[in-house]
Every structure is written in C-alpha cells, then in structure tokens.
Amino acid sequence: MARERRSFGRIRKLPSGRYQAAYIGPNNIVYKADSTFAQKVDAEAWLTDRRREIDRELWSPPGEKPKKSKKVKKDNFEVYAQKWVERRMVKGRPLKPRTKAHYTKLLEQHITPTFKGKPVDAITRDAVERWYRRLDGDTPTVRAHSYSLLRAILETAVVDDKLLDANPCQVRGAGTAERRVRPKPLNVAQLATLTASMPEKFQAMVLLASWTALRFGELVELRRRDIDIDNAVVMVRRAAVRVNGGWTVGQPKSDAGSRDVAIPPNIIPALEDHLKKFVGPGKDALLFPATNGGHLQPSTLYRHFYKARTAAKREDLRWHDLRHSGAVLAAQTGATLAELMARLGHSTPQAAMRYQHAAQGRDQQIAHRMAAIVTDSST
Image 1 (cartoon, rainbow, N blue to C red):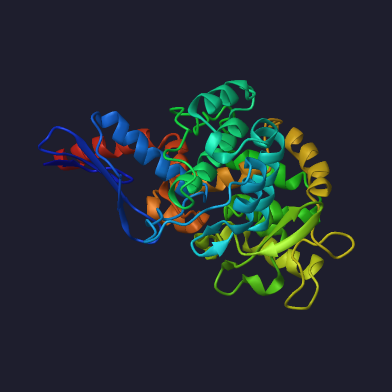
Image 2: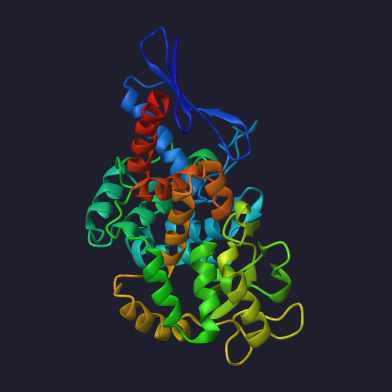
C-alpha cells in the first residue's frame, strides 16, 4: 500500500485502488475518513477541509454514534445556529469573545437572512449552492469564512445531532479565499523612517510590532511586568480585543500565542527610554496606555500611523503589515519553520510558511553559497 508524505494528514492507496485519508487532530488522535475515495483528489479535498476547520478553530472531534437514538428538537436554522455559537467548544473551551462576535456577525449579515426560517433538516445541497453563488464575490475572505461557518454548523447537525444524513455544503474550494492583498514587507530604511515619523510615545510600539512581530491586541495589553530588559524578552500572556465597542482581555489568539519572544538588541535602548518616560511605575502599568489610562484605541494610533507611512513612502502599509515585516526579517535569518511558529505564536505551520516564502532574496543567497562551496574546494 503506497503512502505519501504530506504537511497535513496522509493518503494511502489501497490494494483495491481506492484511497484512504487520515489526519492527526489537535488532540493528537488519528482520525480516518468514514469512507474511502475513488479519486486521490477527493481524498486531498477532504483533508483540506479538515485542515481549514482546525486553522479557523471550527474543528471538533467527530462524534460517536449514541448507543440509543435520541430525539433532537428540530429548531429552525436561526435558533440552531445561535445555540451552536453559544455551546461551541474548541479544545474543551468555549469560543473566545472575538471569535464569537465574528461568527455572530457572519450569521446575521450573510447566512441567517437566507436560511433563518428553514428547518435544519430541510437545507439541501442545491439551496447551499444557490446561497453561495449569491454571496458577494468582491469580498472573497468574508465569502470563504461564511461558507466555512455554515459547513461547520451543518457538520454538527450531521455528526452530533443526526438532523442530516450528509452535509449539504459540498461546493469544492468554497472555503478558500485567494489573498488579493499580498503584504510587502518594509525594508530596514523604511522601518527607520516610519518609526522616526511617529510621536515619541508610539515609537517603541512600532519597534515591538515589527522586530518582535506582536499582534496589535498583544501590544496594547503589554504591561511593565511583561518586559524583561535584563534577559531581552517580552512575555506575551494576554491580549485585548474590542467586542461591541468595549475591551475584553483574555488569552492570546491561540494556545501557542502565550510565548516568550526574544527582543533584538538594537531596540533595547528605545524600550528602556520608553519605560522611563511613558510607563507608570507599577508592574501592571500599561506600556502603551490611552490618555485616560485605559487601552489604546486603534483610531488614536492610526491617525499618526497614516502620516508616518506617507513619510516612509509606503501608503499601502497596514499596521498588521509590521508583524509581517518582522516575520519576514526572522525568516531571512534562516529561522526554521518551528522557530517561526514559536516566535509568531502560530499553532499550525501553514501561516508561518507564508513568511518563509516571502523572504525574498533567500534563494539567491543559497545559490551563491552553493557556488562558494565549489570555489572554496578548488582553492
């Protein structure tokens, strides 16, 4: 039986000529597809769907068949979807506030208007395909997220609640959105100009966002006790997110988000200066507080950031692109995939791989080093 190596899951060809697909879930348990596949591409598509569910925290272990059949109240889709969001568990924990708000928004704006009054067991494949075709093609990410959410909800209806015999979400590739905006990392000179063009109290924030690749929510929740200057480490343990106009503090985006990130020596003096000038003496004092002492509002930061990016001649730049730039800088040093995942706080390799691919110029360096081997051996 032939088996191939893959970055996620495995596919093997059986003596019968059919293909069997399996993968290791986040709980380190191996799960196999319920049936084999006539074509290899179908097995690959099944694995791709499972990987996306894991990446987007939509995955849950396949349910076991109950010993006794139980009757499940047939809610309409709107009620069922609301209950699904409330009871959804990821790795044994409820959804994080921001994730819950994101799912609720997708349901209200893009899914429920079509299916709200329909019984869950009456949703058909044709109905899903008609709904998907009507979604706005100019917002591919929202379209893909909406489809993935609907598929996850109906998968629960199939596996756990036995309301459907099969998931009607069968639009191949619908859960994927090709990235239209491909971030272009800052070079060192542009980063220096951007930093210098920001108000002094925000310069350290720009440096941390780029050189340590922290997310915005992680930055605004940093406190004095999270910066270890002596050991040159920033300790990421919490993140703040805006939900319904207010701030909620919780764990970072993923389990891997709780991490210690080494601070490059070149920005240590700026951090020391910032701690002296702009941070309160208490260990819980925010590094980048708002004027009222609370969490910094994005709009306050962006007013200055937009001017600074113009000075750096990078009007295409978004704040999150600073994280991208820092990740590419790390990749250019030759950091392995595992090292990038640890530094960036990624649970899966797919996201970190983007930064390795974006480390432009590395292939040329490798080629020149290969040629140097020949030169060195001949001399």
